[in-house]
Image: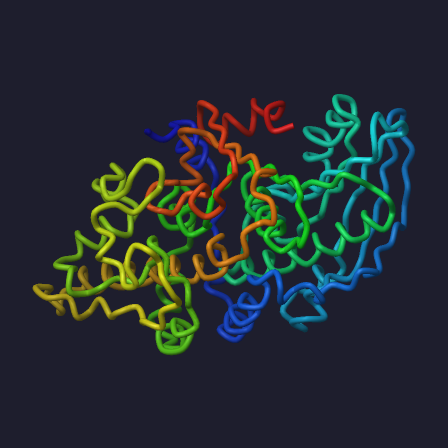
Length: 418
């Protein structure tokens, strides 16, 4: 399946750059990677957020068909990994939109924000208020400070945001239960759908989940999707080259080694073009054709290129091999050095993204039959080629496909999401 021309064109119109600050502090990356080992295991997380975790309502607005409550609470991540959140994110804020008359029970859906969803108005207008009229479902919208100006400053911000939203969603789900609301569900569009998926992996009870325009990992979004062209690779490459801590220390912390892992066996690599093909680097003709993987997202004939094998069995401590050892390359070539550095940086990006965002690194939701994934067939923002599918990771979930791409779905398919 091809990609949407509208997705490609729209991305070219935007001037915003991603990760202009680089990778983030190495110390922060180390701390969040260690915390991922805890938060990725639902059993270990049962006592991280207290059943009576304090949540406050500080403002209520009356409307003709609903009440809009503004609330806040301290993000549980601040207690568990002190100082890793930016000061403005320590106090988590939300908006709770409740119908004045319930149709049946008191159902609530939590909506997590997508990229560029700065405040509440977009989700309130396009999702929350129509859901009250159409189905009598209340909505709780969590505010994300990271999406101001539609971009993330550091790579580490994405991981910190994910950890914070998992714990904040748990705190709010428990608060809603205490207040007598039921049934509860979660959703989100684009990055919001992805973050909602992460949150549900950590919830110890069956819960409906509707992730829209998101998939199994964020690594492909930033290395092969159209957003890869918005990544500030020059700064990332510079930091990776200057600071040896990324290659010498942080890579050792990366444990994910599934069939779509970034850990490459060097014996099978013959030249830079082969790596371009394998990694799906922007501009690689073979990668854009997607010949190295099945349409469904499974790794294909080249699975034995990957350390750990196609089964993804076990956690591997293998390090990303230096690409400077490739045979047949002219090491004195400045062009080759730049290409090698870019390849290493893209490989490192895939490694750290998979470590903290790959759904296979988190617990399987309690009841996958309650999950309906909504996908756009020609989505250029969320590539599905070359990565494990959600059906493989969450057996029993349903995937529904819409025609079109990411942007057209967001603009014209909100009724399907609802």
